[in-house]
Length: 156
Image 1 (cartoon, rainbow, N blue to C red):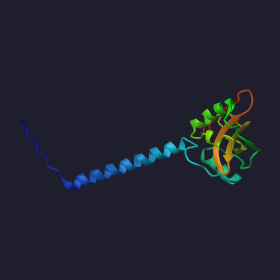
Image 2: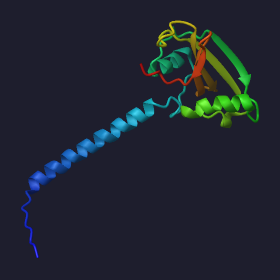
Image 3: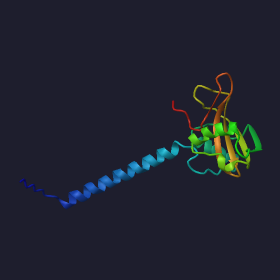
Image 4: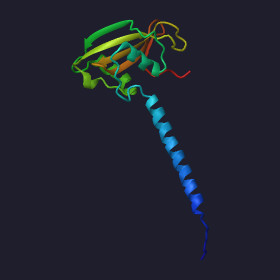
């Protein structure tokens, strides 16, 4: 039979527990910050004005001149057709979902993007709003090497 004895200093235990608590809180805050930053649609965004929409795009890392190049009003089909179902997969990747807005009137605002890596022109950001709330968005590149991507700024 073994007997182990240890002497604990209450001041040191309190100090270590406090330091561990501070580190734990810092880790939680960092994880929640980066988790939110990685998903443009994670939280509802109100963007009623050109200035608010441009600020939202800027918060995601995009540079625009703040004025839409095109504005289009249309109704989403009810139910979503195959093309919108496919497009909605892109939206689901970034935290948006068009299904709750099927059959509703939507407005698309397109902004010329000035800082897409490797594509100095022919790139636009599209924001889709129902009322004043952003419900979807994408980055669209025209031309031979065209693509459609999420609003997430690409890693360089």
